[in-house]
Image 1 (cartoon, one colour):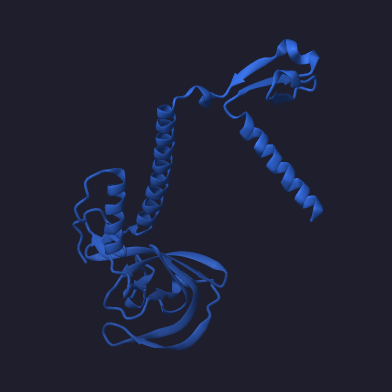
Image 2: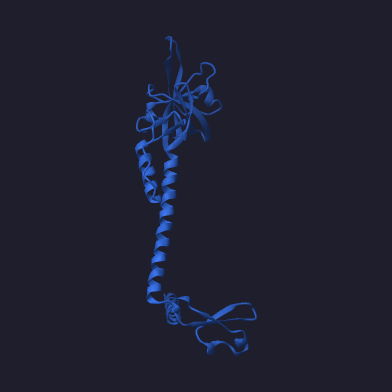
Length: 249
């Protein structure tokens, strides 16, 4: 405790010394070892260094009160502008997470979805299907992966036939800005070749509030928040508020 008190007193003394010389002339010299030393008066400079003495005048000493006020305003403006740039970057990153490029084949929208299961990461292409109550993954897309099977059964396909189906627990499902942990997904027997790895169903889509931009081939997740972020970015940049995107569900 005594050491801490002495250190604190020394620090306060140092600050007081600096405060006392603010606005005054500051002298400096360089020792044989190359260390630059600053002192507040000429008599504190050792005799052997006085031939190299230089004077450093505090820049603020010559400023008028009006100039000091203006300088303070400029510094405050610079801080405000820096904070604004940081907020714009934060909002842009948030907005960009809500925008996902997709592939559109006819009237089918193929969404990139990442899953993690059994310690492996798989990047899948799932068809967005609002008619599917549960997300479905083709068995061949999970080939070689150890599945955490919760239940086995049969699924009825078009034409009345049946195929094998397993309900499996996936450690993580991620698409757009959304992440789902320990989610139960259906894995079905593959029925031939397909351009996708399965279906992205309403168990994951129900609360996303998405909109599809068919022209740009993108999905906007949580479209309301996306528009709010755009409006805030425009406001912070001093631009006109953009019109809402022309997108369709």
